[in-house]
Length: 167
Image 1 (cartoon, rainbow, N blue to C red):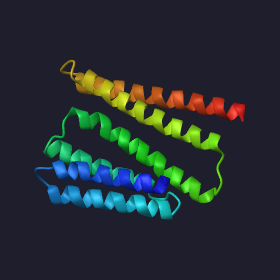
Image 2 (cartoon, rainbow, N blue to C red):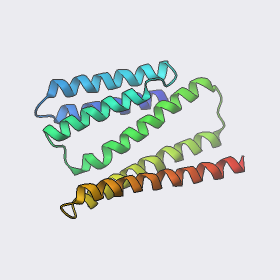
Image 3 (cartoon, helix red, strand yellow):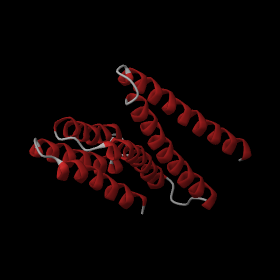
Image 4 (cartoon, one colour):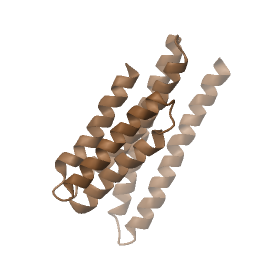
């Protein structure tokens, strides 16, 4: 089920920029297809190509964003989709290794993926909002986005630490 969700998400992430591209459509389609293939192979090869899959999908989005423009909504949601895809791919690998999981573990993992997606969207929104504020907004946006991302992962580490102390 997790592998299917990862495959559906990877396909959606590949199709979104490819279908919205006005130029370099073939390049976008190739990068998207390669990203989906890397995601499938990573599930079969125990996560060895997760980074490659995420890179190819991000590269497809970046190419289309620069050439055709995809709007601000996609800039906030697409990175969160990549974060969730990475989590799902690694989770699919874990499930392949562990046949039986406790419901508490599954619930914790679902919560962690959800918080990661929300945190990723918030980090992107903060970076976009900061970048639009002034001429030096690009630098400020990068710093704010980096700080927000560090904050998101700090919260996640705290949650993981609490969960491991309870166990």
